[in-house]
Image (cartoon, rainbow, N blue to C red; front, side, top):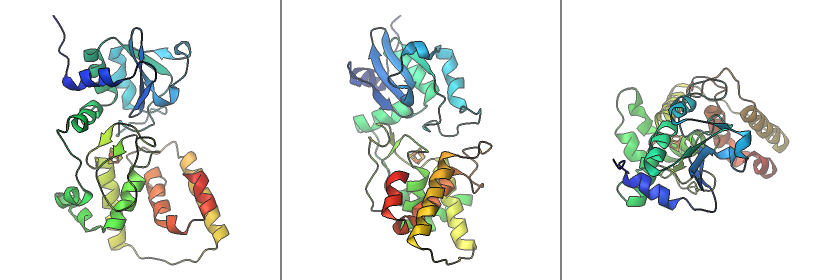
Length: 266
Ligand code: SF4
C-alpha cells in the first residue's frame, strides 16, 4: 500500500534543497542519498559518525526534556538535546518524525505557504482572553511589545514571530527560522500576565545610574543569560532568574543601555 503523503510533508520534501541544509525551528534538515537528515540545528556540519543515530520511535522522548532532563514546554526552544541524527527515507516518515520532534511546526509552515492561515495581532489575541488572563489586554502596546521581544527572544524560541505587536522591526528568518508563529503561546501569555499584574500591583522605585554602571548592568544581564540556574524549569516564570524575565527587564532598560554594551549582548 502506498503511504499517505500529506500536502504539507510533500511540499517540505520538495522545498528542502539538495545542496544545503535548512533550519526548521530547532532542527536542521538536509537531503542525503538515503533521504532527509534531521538533527539539531547547532549540529549542522558535524560528521554523522560523531553523532548518535536515532530510531523514529526514540524521537518523541528526545523532544520532551533538555540536556538536564528538564521538561521542554516549548518544542520550538533551541534547548533541544544535541548530538544525534535521524535519516528519514520519505515524506510520510518525515511527517511522523517532525510531529514527534516539533509538533505543529510543519502545519504552521505549510499554513503560511498555502495561505490557509494568517497571523493575528497581539490585541486581537489579548481581547479574547478570559479568566486569570483577561487583564493582559490592559497592557499598552509598548508594554506588550517588550513582553513579546523578551518572551520570543532567539535565546528562547526558534519560531519566527509573525503575529504583530508594536512598531519595532519584525523578527527575521535569519535570527529565528522559516517556521512561523501565528499567535502567542502559553509561555508568552503567562509572561504577559505576570507583567500586567506586576505593573498593576507593585510600587515603583527610581534610580539614577551612570553610563558605566549601565554597562555593568548589561554585562550582568549577559552573564545571567549565559549561566542560567540549572535548577530552574523553562516554564517557571515565577522565578526572577527565569531567562524570559531577565530578558524582559533588559528590554525595558534597552533605551538607556550604552551602545557598546548592546553590540555584544545581542
Ligand atoms: S509566542 Fe513567541 S515564544 Fe511562543 S511560540 Fe511564538 S515565537 Fe515562540
